[in-house]
Image (cartoon, rainbow, N blue to C red; front, side, top):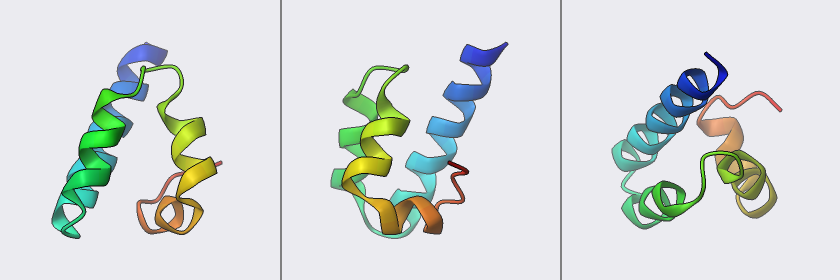
Length: 56
């Protein structure tokens, strides 16, 4: 169940970024492993994390 929730959250973030015109960052997240994408996103793009509604 956790993997499904992570995937859904990842997809939602990717769609939100695409809506914001940030396709390159969305593609970058898509390429990251499922178990590491959120940590890397928080580390590299902390402002976007808030915009995408990620809870840390």
